[in-house]
Length: 222
Image (cartoon, rainbow, N blue to C red):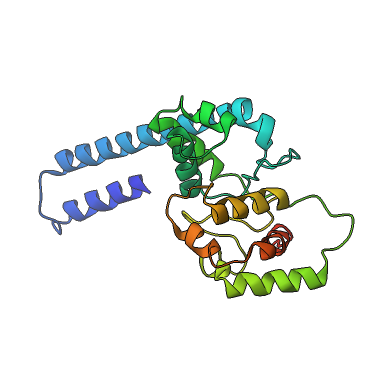
């Protein structure tokens, strides 16, 4: 902690083991640094609270207060990574992703808003999907997993499909949303921040996309 570093520095100076300005000046500088760090921490906490409230009033109606809703075609944000979230908000703001509601919202956002919302999204823990009426079909899951390995999905998204940093968590994502996303990358109508997904999906037959979506949506990871 900062006060311990300050005490240690003062002790070393008092023993003559550290050369430098007088102890009072050194202590004054250290105290100023502690004060500045404390102010920054307070400001960051206040900013986080603001975007938590803005998420509840602006985003939760569609995405759910905890980041998962029952609205068809609406992606799960719970457990998503902040770096991925900010790239998607940026694409919406620049009109590069096609969703009327999201483009309208994002166009009003300044850079600080992109960071604030995405940082808050990054704090949302994963929320499991409601229990299905029947267990996932074992044959379809096996086929989907084989496709995910063949087409290197697990290379970027991880064996548990949890992603990381700029790579989205896709395990447990809604099946209809996953399928629509895969079809969008396949057809070129869904732009990415890079061409990685477009190039990867160019190698996947159209008929295999539903199997991949089924596997992804029903994969809960560890």
